[in-house]
Length: 569
Image (cartoon, rainbow, N blue to C red; front, side, top):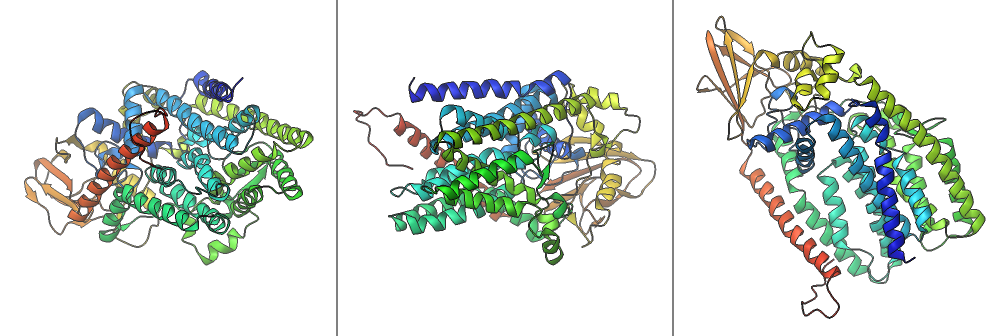
């Protein structure tokens, strides 16, 4: 059987396994609501409704988050939100959406690990075993269980590792600016923190490559080209962030104890901040084998992987560090996130080691099989139980006091996916424009001022993306309106532009209502520079897309073709 046949067979088996991994949730018949689920459901619902209605607003959230006009998608993966919105519109309900996106993320991660393992010389059987094991550990299972965005960092990390390994093994062409640009730019459009972790992980390989390779100047130029193009492709993200942070004091994410969210050994789970004991044994054996016979970059791959794993764990002095730098508790939150890059690197090292000696290979395979069996059993049980439970009330706020658990279950499986958004919300103060430095009890304030007040108003979206709130008042007096007003926002009440608005500490305006019908119109007006950066990002992706098409065309170009070779990538 040829290499191409082996590759096709491995991918076919991977597809089948990805389908089988959906069975626990499919059999349970329920939508899983975890710690981040409602936050991202609201983001994707907003994108889906924009696509469905054609009433677009790049900045304001007019459909999700109780239609309060806050800015989220513009600074948190706008393209990815639109993609998920399209998938939601395609599947019609949250249950189908969760199954489809779980399949997609597992397939993306699995193919990445298959390719990475083959790059390291592993056979098709070991490559498939590494890929399937990878799908069951770290942050990847947490997309299905809780919609944690670090799962997408974990899915894309194997592709990053291929670029890193090329830096230290390919002396003629250590950097493919096309691949490097693509992986970092796509990650930036999904999750900024994963992007930062990726960039930091690249540094030791770049430094080692500059020492090892023959064409250092060429490597430097190709890397610089990738950096410049990535900046252009991500201009919509950092441009929107600059817009908001320059004119507003934004709320930070919730603080977490870094030590308690660092990696620690577990007897049952290999997900998130837990690492199975058998995985520790696996990585320990791989380290011993590497020390015994270091080969062509394997030692550096294992060294960087182990170093990152150490920093991600409770062995690192996170307790002391968070005392010195308390901002890390909000900005970084979970040191275990670092396993998104540590695990692929270590698996790459294991893939190379599996080619050296029969007994060594079988020891590694036995440990991998043990990891896969233990991790997959735990994950399957957890997913099935979460699906059967349907609703974890820890992570939501009921918007209708009469809503029962069954009402929420029915809404989560309804073909009208807006029903769930109407029934429950989440106290998420992220990116709100604070009027005070203190964030004490901010989630509770958000619940009282926004979540519980929104149902008292009628919401409409104008074709130009303006948000319109209508209500009737029995008397003329001051009233809090559950929308979020930034410095860039324009508020029109009953036909009059409101200036010098008094706002609550999270940005909700107090307006003077009149007796009878009241109409408030909210719009967002970024600076011309921000408009320019959004245009630059769009044009850059258009040009980059054409370059990618030319590159693909070149790969499949017949040898005797008269069409010129462009030398791209």
